[in-house]
Structure formats: structure tokens, C-alpha cells
Length: 285
Length: 244
Image (cartoon, one colour):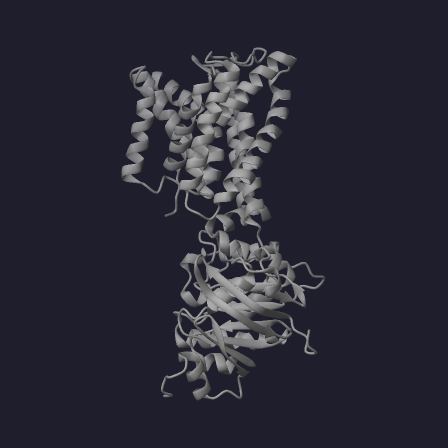
């Protein structure tokens, strides 16, 4: 029972990671752009959400409707004004540019919100749970998992069935060849990053409801997203989801073994996958 | 301009890679429906010339004219909208995507015209093997089949001018024949074609006119039927070389 509970909690934790991993699967896995500020953007959006909910007294749902477009706009601008300058080059310039952005964001958030941890009130949803035969399942983590699953499925379909998805995969495979086939890679990339960061608008609200948030939390979320994408396999949208589940389950089981071992267990599974199946679980390669 | 209508012309075209100048005042023209070959040794600047036309290299506005309009230095996707498409050297297919998805990218972003000359059905009729392999990932295809996808992808952009860069490179003679057999059919639709080719005899046979390049300069311009081997050898290797 203890291990079944750990497994279920792990899957639910994986649902939260999958929300971070989705944008990462798109940017890092498909476009091969390294966005070090990915985790800081989640934290920034979560903090904006918390402040907005306090200031205007609005609930989580209207917040999502504000934060997702805001996040998409941030993503679009990030790509248009920063990352598009390094399209076609190797991934090092994007890494350095977003590394700088990451540090600047962390300090900006520290200035605005101080180092205090905060959380969002969700009108009871954050603590509601269902009792299934002695295992308590939180309503919010289930919602997060469902949202992550729907988003992953939707993004995967977008990538494989739409004009935009084909253009993005083409530009990612060979930017120059895509351009000579009529694709404007910069526009496609700007929309893709808008989607990747836009999803973080939703994740930010869930993050603030589920846990406490402070300005220095970004890098940990970044690492989980990176690990999930690499465990799942570069270039696969569902890979990021599967990688998140593996990571979530490993951490949850690790926590049951020893409360200090949880996070480390996740990293160890990541290293094991990297050593034995470096192309990732879902990769065809 | 002159009395003969040009689809595309370059005037005093110069291109450089950093400090290295790759093209020196290239004057080139191609008319509607014409097949023009561009020959020359490795490193003569043939691929650079095509890249400059496609908008993949920064060149001056008034160095390239499309229907008498200066278009030099336009973005590649603008050139596609004007009616220029390219079969790049080394094929450059979209790895990880199926044959049909590769072709669909071109359909999605094709030049906007009332009537589509090239449809997926027509490409499959031109290269029946592609229909058979349409669900296969492109990297699983043979070199010749990949070249067919690259040509199909360029045609589905509905070009008025098709740029073909070394489409025979690395292919078996039988496959080269198959590929070159479709060029007259493409030209028949009124599409002009520039072929860059290492095989001089093949280039001469397949074209109406030809240019020869040497170290970034045009050294010969002639009707393909008029040109002699001595002319070509002279232009290909430069002055002072013995004619074979």
C-alpha cells in the first residue's frame, strides 16, 4: 500500500513536471534552443499570479486567462528580440543569452517580491482530496495531471497534423532548407516560443497553488524540465511527458525510502538513463 | 532593359563570405521557359551564385532582378513567393519527417497562384516510387529517391524559376538518367531552370544555353548547341591550359 501510494503520488508529481517539460520539449527537444530562464519564467509568472490574486481578489481561473496570454507575449518577445538573433547558429549563444536573462530575472524578482516564500489561495481546491480505499489523492494534482496530459496530446497533434507544426519541424531539422521552401523560420520560432512559454502561464498558477514559491526556485524547476526531456528523448513531445512521469515516480519512491533521498533518486534515474539509453526512452534513434 | 524579356537577371553581382570575395561582377540572364546550365570546377562559385539568387547570401538590392524588379538580398521566403525555388546541393531534406510531410511543407508555403501547376498527385506521377514510400522517413530512402523528394519539394513551391544544384552528385548513372529525364517535362510547363552541374556533357545536353564560371567570374556564355569542347576547356580551366 505504501508503495502503491508512492507510485500514485509520483505520477501526480510527474504531472506538474510535465507542465514544465512540455515547453522544454518544444524549445530544447525540437528547436534545439537552450532556455536557461525556463524555470525562472515559471516562478515569475507564479509570483505575478500570487500578487494579482491578492491585489484584485481574483480566483485561479481568471488568473489563468490573464497569465497565459501574458506568458505567450513574453515568449514571443524573447524569441523575436533575443533568440532569433542566434537562430541557425549552435546552441551556445542561446544558452549564454538566457543564462544572463535567468540571473537578471532572479534578481528582479528578489527586488520586487523579496526572498519570502508565498503561495496562492485557491478557495479550497488546493487542499481538496479524494479518499480511494485509504489512499488520499489530491484534487489539484489530479487536475494538474489531466491538464498536462491534454496539453501534451494537443501539442503533439499540432506538431504532426498542422501547417504550423510541419513548418516548425522543418525549420528545426534544417533552418536554411525550410527558408528556401518558403517558411519564415523566425516567425515560426517566435510562435513556438510563445506556445512554450504560454504553457508556463498555466503552470505558474498550478505551481503557486500546489507549493510555495520564492524568487530562487527557478533553477530547480529548470533542472527537472531538462531531465524529463532528456529521459524521454529529444524531439519527442510525449517523451517529455514520459520523462516527467519517470522523474516524478523516482522522486516519490525516493522520498518514501528516505526524506532526504527523493530529489537525489530522481537525478540518479536520470543519470542511469543517460548512461544506458542516451537517446531517451521514446526516441526512435 | 533589353528587348528580350528576362525572368531573372543579375547585374554586376558580387558576393562575399567575410573577407573572401566569391563572385565578381556576374552578369547572368534567363528567359521564361529556358534551361540554362552553369558549369565550372569545384569552388568556381556556382553554388554561391545560386545561394545569392535564393536570398541565402547578402547581396545588393540592384544586383538581382526578377522581371525587371530589383530583388537582391530578399529573404528566401520572399523569393519563394516571387517564384524561385531551389533543389539544394546535398538535398537538405527535413530529417525525421515523412516523405509526404516534407512535400507538404512546400505545399503549405507555396507561391500563391490561382492555378497550381504542381500537385502532390502530379509529383507522384512524375516519381511513382515516392507514392509508395510516402509514409517513410526521408532518411530511410536511397540517394536517388531523396533527390526525387528534393525536386518534388521545390516543384510544389510552384516555381517559375527552378534552381538545381548538383542534382546528379553521388547518384548512379541510371538514377541520374531518370532524374534528368524529368527536366524537359518541368520546362514544358513554362518553368525556367538553372542547372549547376559537374558533368559538362550532361549539362550541355540538358540545356538551351550555358555559362561557365572560373574563380567567381563568368568566362563563357553560349548557346549549348554551338559551344565546342575547346571553348569549354578554355573557359573551365582558364587561359594557358592545353586543350585536351
